[in-house]
Length: 302
Image (tube, rainbow, N blue to C red; front, side, top):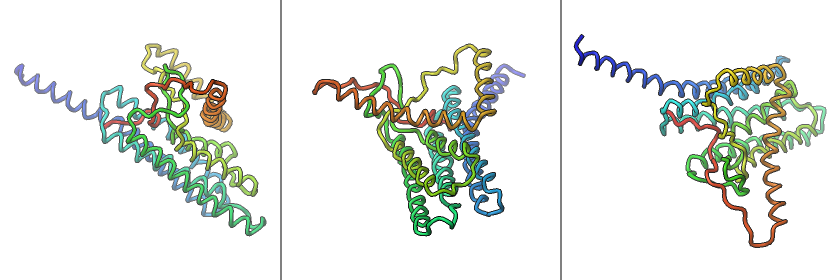
């Protein structure tokens, strides 16, 4: 083979490899969508009334939790392989609407309100049905608005600035909000709510998650964690421990992590308001540069 022929063959192989690298992040996004679709089908299956509704609802919650790593990895892989694109960004946003918007809102409604027994006051039961459907819809609108705000924001700043050397999300990321709802369902073994007072608490939690998504409060992004550091064995060892604990004690661990993250944003806002009251009038905290208005590691691949 001539020298020119070998050069052309090498260029062809590199082009094919490049196309394969563009496809890799999209596979993670497709996994995200697949998990959301599976969650929706399992939630619908729970309505069948075969006596195993909690099994279907638990699988629906697990699917949402399982999709969070997919959503976190697709963007990072796209950046590591230099295969980011506007198409990947939009595809990731649409995937998040399905998996972290539609799926958890449907799960929240069916688990928290659909199976309320007829033994409770009929008027109260009807009110909870209606309020539950409305609040779950508001959660979905809040999630979609959160994603839309990210798509048009370039350097959004939280209302309560944090440390200048860290980056923050503006508002609670939609995967974190969905994780909070799914982790709660999983924590209670997905047995449907049957007490009216529990349904009211669930109503408050779903509404709170929806509000936090559209808020301008800061939430820790975790982007200062560098997974590219050259400590493969230490990192693998640590990830193995984390993975084992998360699987073995999934109900307690996932619920605790989701709850702590949600209240970390609330605490940060309360602490900022308290510190402002203590300062003299006319003084302001310096604005934080580089705050993140995006979802965790949004995919911007082709």
